[in-house]
Each structure stands twice: as structure tokens, then as C-alpha cells.
Image 1 (cartoon, rainbow, N blue to C red):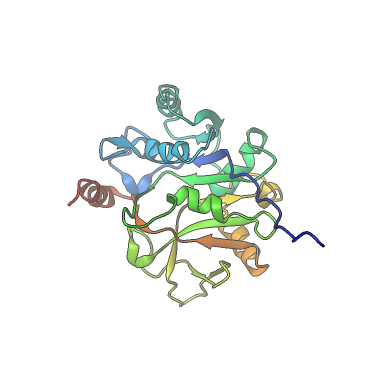
Image 2: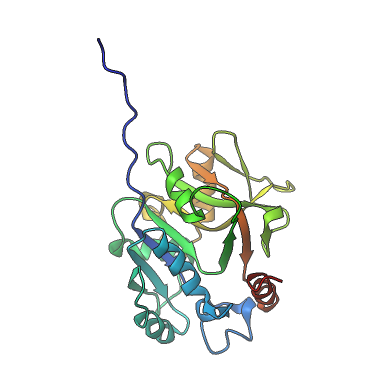
Length: 252
């Protein structure tokens, strides 16, 4: 009698994250006149700590954080953290490298396998009525290195605040992502966290570059997937959005 076939075990979820915190935060002025955007507080907690605490609660053990604007303040703040994850600084004082360039610059500090990449200007409330894992865990649970090069955390435009009203992407029934064409309105927005393989940025140019063109090329090859966990997502991109997020966190 032949033994039944079993599916191969899924890879363990990433235990390392790259946290993108080197931006100038110009849209957040005057709140960023004396600090980086990552240290602007929402609900009594710095944006940086909102994301680091989420990652730590999901089992991330190490976070590589890039610094540029008010880098000394960032390093001092990070040095005071005692909760997981442990912090490694990727220094971009000489030049801010944008999203793709920042990740590529940090590759020597990152693992050879897939890792999380997170923005610091997205915070969210998980849906207390929805069973199952939290949002970070949902992305990790969706990740499949055989099929994917990138897995994006997405939210419906109706369940997000401060993001594009016209959306970013379509989510196909099998989980693949299709980026909207010019003039299209898409039902989902990218909400600041994804998993990727190092190879996504290894071939990128030297200096600053964005992840978005790389994602669009990979999506054409069917290598970008997404997941939309239940919850409410808030993009804290300017002082007005910060006030709205604070009110929402306070239960208003």
C-alpha cells in the first residue's frame, strides 16, 4: 500500500525585518522640524515603536532600521528600547536611498532568506470580531517562497484612512497582485508591510531607487502576491492624518 503524499512543510516565517525610517517627512512638517517622522507620536507612542512592537509581537527577533534625517536622535531612541526586536542600524547619513536603495544598502545586515520590510507611517487596529492571526502573522502565513518573490499586506480602500482613494492594486482569486493601469480605480491599497526575497533588490542600481518599478515588473511575471487581513488601516502622512489617527485610537 502506497503511503499518501503529504505537502512539503512551509518555511518558517521571517524572524528579521527591515524598517524604513530614513525619510525626511516633509509632509509632516512642522512636526518634523525637530525630529524624524519615525519619532512623531500617535497615541503617546512614536510611529517607529508602533511598528517595532507589532513586529516583535509577531515573533520578529531582529529589526534593521535605516537612519538619515536626525539620525542621532533616531539612534538614541532605538538604544533605549528594551522590548523585542533587537535593533541593528543601517546608516544612510551620507545619502537617503529611498525604499529600494535603502533595502539594498542594508543587505549585508539582512539574512540570505526572505525578510519583512516595513514602513513607519502605517498603523492599524486589528478587527476584534475577526478570528485568526494578527495582520503581520497573516502575511507570514501567506508567504510561500516557491510561488512568490514578494507578499504585500493590503487593505480595502473602504477599510483604510489616509491612503489613495483610487487604490493601488487588484487581488486575484489565487492571491496574485495586479497593479492598476493609468486611469483605473483599484479596490486595494498597500499598507506598509511586506515580505520579500533579497534577490528583489540585489540587481537594483547603485544609489537611491524605489521598490515600485521592481514590484510592477515582478507582478507581470506573477511573482507578487497579497493578503488583506481584517482591520482598520491608517496612513499617518501629515499632521491632519495624525490627528485623525489619534482620535481613532482613542475610540472617537
